Image (tube, rainbow, N blue to C red; front, side, top):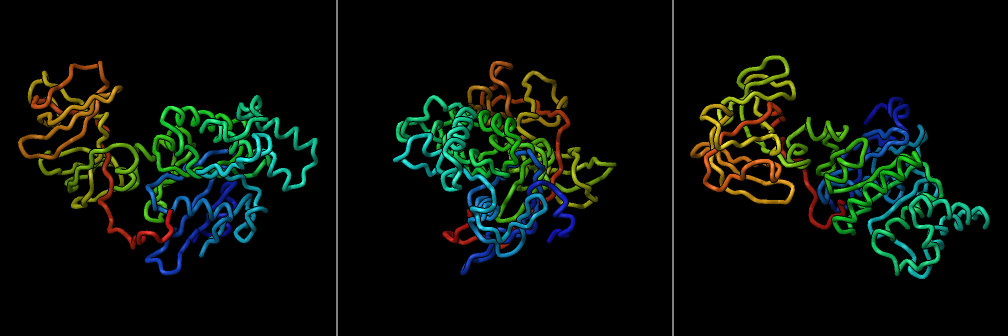
Length: 381
C-alpha cells in the first residue's frame, strides 16, 4: 500500500491500495489499485469487460465497500463514509431517471432530498439545465426525450447538487456512434466549464484518449498504467497496454545490442529492428510495437530501400483509411498497415511492396504470466 502520508498529499482524489474480494471468488476483483486525480482534471478508467473498473468506481462512490485500501478526498479519508454523505455525483450507465417526473423534477430530486429551499432549488435546476442545454425542455417527461437528452438530464441531476467529484460509469454506452461523438464533446465542455474533478469508466479507447487529461488502464483487477493519453498510446508500459490501446503490430524478438535508450532487436522473419523503450539488456525478450498508421507501403520503391519486402494479403476500405494486411517475405510475420484513403494509389492483394516505418518502433516487455483470473459470474466489472 502507498505510504499514507504521501497519498494524503497527492491529488484531489486519491485511491490508496484499493482491493475488492468476493466470497467464493477465485482471486480478487480489484487488486491494490493506487492512483491520484488532480483537482479539476478528468481521469478515464479504461479496460475490457470484467477488469474491475466499474467495481473500482463503485468503491469510490461508496456503493461497494473495499476489502482493503482507502479513498481520500482533499486528504480526508472517506472510505467508511456512506455514499450519500460523500458529496459525489454519479451518472450510471442506465441513467436511472424517474419516468413519472418531468425533466426539471428529475434534476430537482437530489436537492429535495437535501431539503434545499424551493426558490434555491428552482434557481439551481435552471442553471443546471442551461449548462447541459436543456432548459427549453424543463417541463417535458423524460420518456419523450432522445437517448442523448436523457443522458444530459442524468448529468444535470448529478451536477445540480454541486458535488466535489463527478463519477461517470460508461455514460455513453447506450448511444449510437454519431451521438457518442457529440456527447463526448459536450461532457468535456461541461467538465471544463465547471472545473469539477471527474472520473469516468469506459471500455472505449477513443472516449478515453479524446476526453481525458489522464488515463488509467486496468486489466484483471490491476492498474497496468497511469499517464496522459499520449503516454499511454505512444509509450505503453507493457504488452497488454500496447495491445489494448489502439491497434498495434507486436513482433516478438530478442534484444541483441543496447545503445542508450535504443535497442537492436532480432525479430524472426524480419531481421534486426531498432526500437526505443524500457531499459533492456542483451538477451532480454520483448515485443517490437509498430502502429499500423506508422507503416508505409510502396510498390514502386526499389528493393532494399525499406525495412523489408512483403506481399499485400488483403486491403479493406474503411472510409477514412485503407487497412492492409501484409506478409513479410515468403513466410515472415504478418503486419497491419493503414494509409489515408485517397492519398495514395491503392495496393491490390498480391502486390509486392517495400515496407518501411518512420522510426517509431517501441520495445515493450514480454507478456508476464497472467495472475489468477475471475471465474464467470463472480461480479467483476
